[in-house]
Image 1: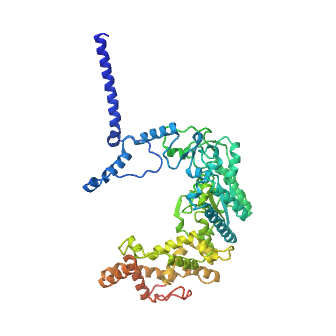
Image 2: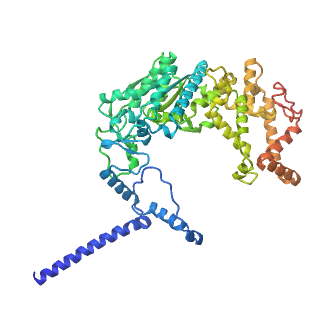
Image 3: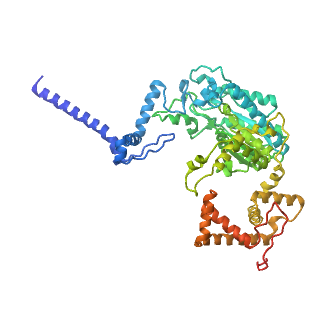
Length: 598
């Protein structure tokens, strides 16, 4: 080789080395530049991410070693190009090993994905997550079925139909794509058990898994998406079957669903909600493509009715809401998500905790109540719905409170419980309050602790049911409710007591509390005087000291004690301090002569 040739090779190698060095430096420093200087917008990762705050360096955290751990966690969540790096690594795991670190996703065969609960349910391993044993599960499930039947009996007496609807279980509809596993022979399938017990006891139930298994070979798309967790457009077919089932129960004719021309959806997001949790760089190949959709409308005429319907159940309900024009089929729809959050209003956009609802009035406010579930979740029973419904429908408030007190008396709890909440009297929660809440929670889970509900037959009814039919309409009238709140102030009563007293007057044909205009105006003036007085009491040191002492002794906030003291003073001023609704519901309020009459 000539000298010139050797020189050219050396220069070429040097150029390559420089290029490789520059690439290496770019790979090393680009993440740092992206994180701190360039801030290139990147597609965020799917799923839930708990933000980690940047730790502060101080002597104590440095010496204890906490700073290093916190800084490591922070850097692990904030290094440059984190999102594409994680997606690239996840793609490597998926492509090479069919492995994923997503806790809510199980990889099946041929690119199918499942919820882990669905896989465990198919192989019999989900029940031990919720039940101590198979024998205990049978006892608990039998109680659920009994309570549902009893609640249905009372509801049907009041014109309300209660039924069960079981959406299809993906693992049971497409078991051929599940990962291999061994069947747990010590358990049983909760869905099949409930369905059999419903049939034996005559409780109305419509179950979709068996029908979807039969139907899956007659369509050219998956009834439940390959990489999704829930059904999509097939929910329309199930809803139409539900409507026909509801017709048979009540004898009323409901709207029919009309399905337009089928076409592919523009957005495939719901088809691959499980796939999105994998955070892959490349999409999974869908063997059967994506499911179709179509326009759906309701067909009705002069013979059809639009009932009020309550659904109590899980997330499979959202597909019905998204594909079925519910407002064309029903007069009113509510959805109690996992018997926890109540969705109501236009397009189910308004939310409220179920615990804040008057359960008795709500249950009686619908024409149909549909307990809505899927197979794997039946291992939990009814999530407390059957128990809570039965207790509210069958047991008076006073009797329920008596058993809550009895249970609370059996629970432990000393001063340590109260002190653990906080030493400040303004913020401390009393031990009794904690015990009563726990006792009520126990009673809701175990209605059999009430002797009237522990036998084999139902013979009790909540005496408030006749009142509930009236009070639910009164509550919808804001002016009526405001009038009763004003009367409650004058008569030392709760608003609930005033509601029942108003119903008694309606039934007896007596003048209503809401129509006593002078009394209502007088109450509003008294309440305003009490508010004004509450702002002046702190100026009286002796009075204020007694309020502070009373507040601390009785575990009440100073603000509440101030309010009560002002109200008591004003009531005494106008001789209202002895006026109680329970003593004389017909008493006329002595309005002062100088009060301007209308």
